[in-house]
Image (cartoon, rainbow, N blue to C red; front, side, top):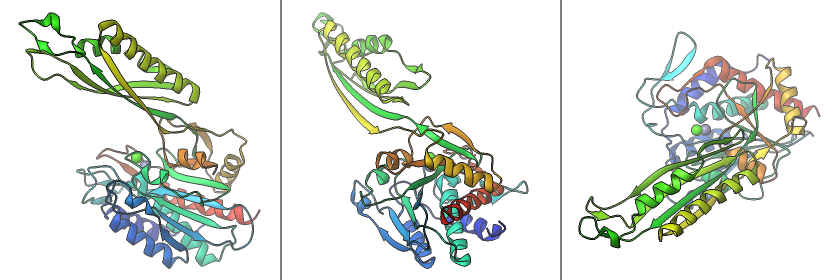
Length: 374
Ligand code: ZN
Ligand code: CA
């Protein structure tokens, strides 16, 4: 297993994190990666996801045609980062941990995944390894709501999907993730002068407050959470406010629990508004579907076997949020989300151990080997 080249992998990871790619501004990284994948012998294309909204680049879809038999594998990581993500200066500590200089994120989320995929592909090429076909998908705008993944075409096919986008120690396999509703509501009351004739007004802030107080929020059950995260309304202290805007979310590992709790929140808003003579408009959007792979799903067993072969101890876990794995599973590509060793993501203290970067690349290589031997 000594085929993964530590120096090459680390230097490529450091190169990638120094290319700015905050969500929607992935153009430069996208071009760099298309070049690298092409040089590794893959057929590379970019889809039209950049045309949605204010994107500058599409998803990269790259394919290595089968060399032998076995299951078709798909590796997926996202190109974009959160802010502050510009001008990243990576520092490799004497402790073997890579961090940013401290004023930005590092971008191991998700460039650790990208670097591991590139290194594994390099070894496949050098060693002329057999495999049943490999698809690489590097998405855009994951961090702003899985926008890139949602735009992926239906023609993408694979037997097993591996998303490299979970924090935690390599060996952790995310097999369950929630679905999520986004909920917005506007409460309409009636404006009036607060001092002269408040009797003529209906206070939308008061109505919204009563409704929120009647809701169950936070952890609803072990698999379900709910939050009202934004509220705005009112114009001045001497006006009875006639409008309040709310935004919230409901997540659950069980689709029916999510739907039921979202429904309950909407009914509380409507009922409270009705009693106060106010009106409410609610809107619910399903942001993504959840997934729940059993311990003996073929992709899970396959992953566990590859982990054991390269000295990682597999453990099945669940996530509280969505990733590109949610979209792949919804597209009938059974996909797990693998921990890459990145920690404290979305903070300026984000870090990753070089040893974990190497473990992840070794694991990808082992997945490819295992597939080629089947
Ligand atoms: Zn990520
Ligand atoms: Ca992230």
